[in-house]
Image 1 (cartoon, rainbow over the protein chains, first blue to last red):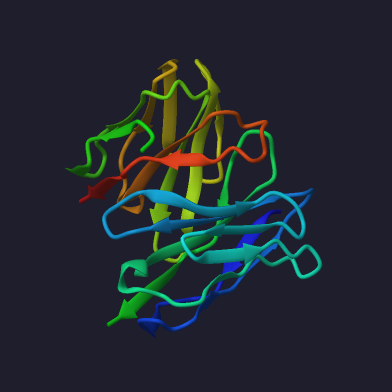
Image 2 (image 1 turned 60 degrees about the horizontal axis):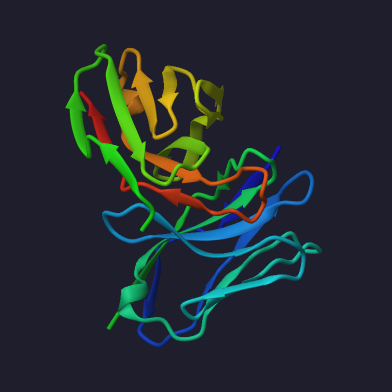
Length: 112
Length: 115
């Protein structure tokens, strides 16, 4: 079956530090990959996506590259801000119904 | 922001009672989904709909039913609530499931507590 594995949190960083959140997946077929972000008390928002191997998704200073050879989609940001404190979810979609398979989520806490 | 409204936003109910959560969209998207969010599990799909009166089960459908009588409304019913159904429930919509790069938009969530 399909699955997504994320590094466990919480991840605590100082402002301006480099952030990496690891995400690996198992999937049949050719999945599309997503990172969603959830700010406290809110729903999920799409952060970035990639639909085929070697695609790089980017948004708000975050980047992730779809690596088929390592089945990974790691999220990175070069200099985090306090406002980046949130829970980050890696997800994949493999079928035509648009169903998403999520990782467990990684809480990121950025301190001033 | 995508026009998705979930109601109620918070609910406390007793074990054994039926509960219905509502998701209303103003985007005219074909696909609608119900997920539950639990610590350590991320979000898991309960049921989804690919059109009016067209629904199917997701990963964790036991104890839940859904209905979609209009494009804009997708109802989730807990037939007899149990404590294991205490969770945060999210509705999502998508314009076209067959378009692999179509994103899903999420509602604000409903926090349900079963006591």
